[in-house]
Length: 323
Length: 121
Image (tube, chains in turn blue, brown):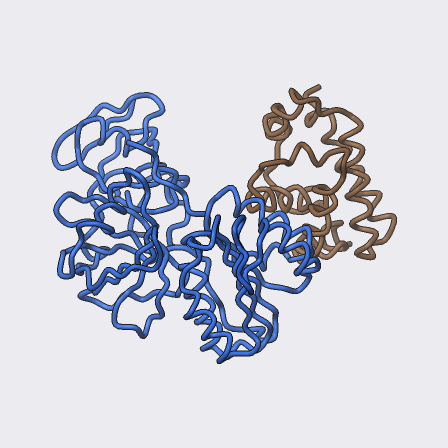
């Protein structure tokens, strides 16, 4: 079995075990969240030996070149020496503001000590400074804003979301790592119609992407479908309606599964809405965000409606497994 | 003498064919159930590798990969009729893209050469 070296100590790895599992088994605190190689919270660096290619999935070439890998995906076959991610990857910051968006969602604004170079729609990992608790959230703000906005839904017994909803105060220290992810607007083909679909806090990246496209003078039709179980789950409605009045080629389509008696709110499934409103999507560009099951099924539906696979951008929000 | 891959149009042809072909596969009642719940991005990548191979392009497929990659589907009942359906959809795709019949014939025979591995025989 491979021997793992970390902080001057050596650990025998179990068969099939990942580096993250091995460190956690030793009782060490390692930032981690999704454990399937998406959130990049468990980023670490090789000191002796090369990380397996499969543990560098989704990392930038420059990061790969520096020996970075994801501990949750890393199952080394020979002895392997590792170190924590360098501090230059984590930007120190503070909570700037926590504001309510709906009964279950707050907007958390972070102020970073260094400018974070991001595209709206990418995600960052927020690390609570005292204990290293880490979770990833999509960015809803634009880079020129002085703080970074995240939408955080309260998850029952979710440690980070409970802290952010109930206890976090302006000035509390956090570290921010990232950005990562490739679900964002790229200028070019300004006349191409855009379809953005999300449920719940899937609105966060889409809100960033819509405004990014608008300020990039995207001229083709832009359609944003935001789905919720019931009307109380819809949020940012005033802001989005205001955007539609300023930009006639932008349309906001709120939709709920039930109790949507209000004018302007569609009632029924997102599938029905898409089938009725957008039966043919050849030449459209799509952005799909939120619950993984929904995102996967939407990807297939828009593809079958004619959208080209390379025009489909998505971000499935992978939940953190219960501890 | 250009290779089959060059005659068909290389990587650009693979890119043009992959969406058409995969859309046919997903909507064909004979085989679509094998693709339920699979991750589309990964599947598109696999389809590209498959098309590159049957177009005679650079690939690292081995008979063993073909066996391993389809063993779980054979357990779910994958048989000759499903294989025939895929070859048929491949032919339709190339026809729609205006590929010459004799080239389609060559692609079909490369696909045919994988039949026993795909079906674990």
